Length: 90
Image (cartoon, rainbow, N blue to C red):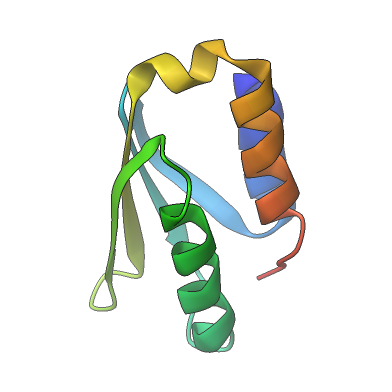
């Protein structure tokens, strides 16, 4: 399932820069074109109780996502994240 998330991210123009349990840093090359969508995606993901925080650094185009590292053990949580991501393309 983790690979499915990474593949989905790549499909949507999101590059995984760093990944450790509980933290992922991604870059979105086209974030300027999709700024409003990016902010909405962050807002949607922040509603998930397994997400601790998400911050966006426009200087680098990086999104820092901190989450409950146990969340990746639950198929239901991953499927929810996938459903959210599938609403957007960058």
